[in-house]
Image 1 (spheres, rainbow, N blue to C red):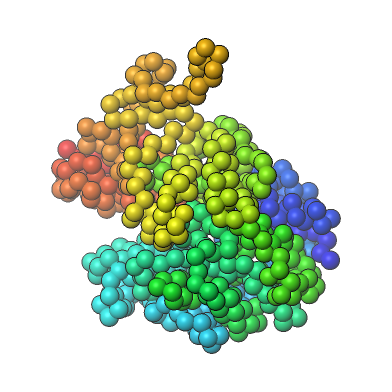
Image 2 (cartoon, rainbow, N blue to C red):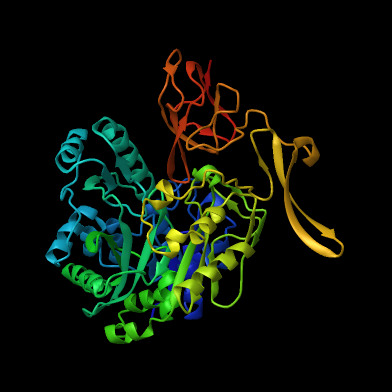
Length: 582
């Protein structure tokens, strides 16, 4: 059995691995950037080593610094978590060459399955149908345009070494190809350290269904459960559930068998996930994630299997502790996982919301679990993923699980940053979700969040200059929690100068002003206008990267650009004036 594990990651996944390792009597080593010096995963680990730097590239993607920490700590294993180096075959090989166990698949399997293009070829070898797309990297806008003209628009440009919606751009027409291609490559490079891309046909109303599997070094592979991950925004998941509901008889088993065949085709072992697109009773192989998934706990709650423990045991050379038949017998009830992201869902825009969490109260109760990477007083940085934590709920059936999840979300308190909780509740309460008629496009195309206002701790401003205040009153001995809109002066000073007063998909303008302000802190990655240029309402003026997501900042007024206050690479704060239009 392994003796000491270094977790080459941060946030809730590092905390998750540390907890299981401690239960198994295994020592843990954390690594941290300058911004994470006192993060929760650092506080929980037995040892911690500084990587230096602030951004991911300077810290958690710094190979030399991590390898140095491995040597200095004497760790005999490395768990990569997800994101960062988790699907980087060069990193896995470097670990293996040191004589240190990599708690993941063999480097060769990462190469073939971690690259979404070659994984499609492996799926075909295993007999799984694939979505029409390229089986080689694309390097020019012309290749993408030719594919769209042949197979029809829209199409999806995807990061070949990515996942979780990072580096994925949907393109509606040939005119948008070059900009989407550039953006996909920038996001992919920032998050995964690679910028290769490929192209697929974009299905019209699909469900996203995946299969969790685990293999050992002795040739055994089992699929543990299916998961439905169709509730998404920006191609990133909001809510996942297990097992995938509403599938025709035999489809779940067919998906599981196809996933196992694809894994065996590349000699896969350790945990992995095969993702499928399901539409009109047909399923197509999408990609394989050669790592543990963010949503793995929802599989754990319906099986009682600790997948991280299985990962560690497989990496130690042990055989899988259960057969396929025994795993199937463990599945019980229904699980739902809700990702709590630091995003502002006001008007359905989901703008990143970095900042300090001033209060965090997590729910409890029967069948309720919370996997978090932060506590009250911790800061969610603009430089990393915005996942605060995950609420995982079990119920004896799907209806019970939905009701219990709603109850738990109503209890949860997060102040200091906006979160996706209001949008999560809107999804769970919607009849389309109950009826399983939603798709990966449903949140953005059908769910009406236009009237939603997030308060980030009880205060939000509307277009009339009023602020929403939450308070508790007592009437004739009965307690009431109330919200009301009151004039700003009634709530104390409110910093308004140069701050946007309403959220917009990429709008950063202040009401009744030609000033285009940053809606959140971040880094400028593209400036689309110059002084003297005429712009129309809705035109993109800059692209702002925050929390590894690119956000198009648009003009709210038509006119001529008179000032450009930023350039590519500049760091900006919320409310900073980027562009002036007259």
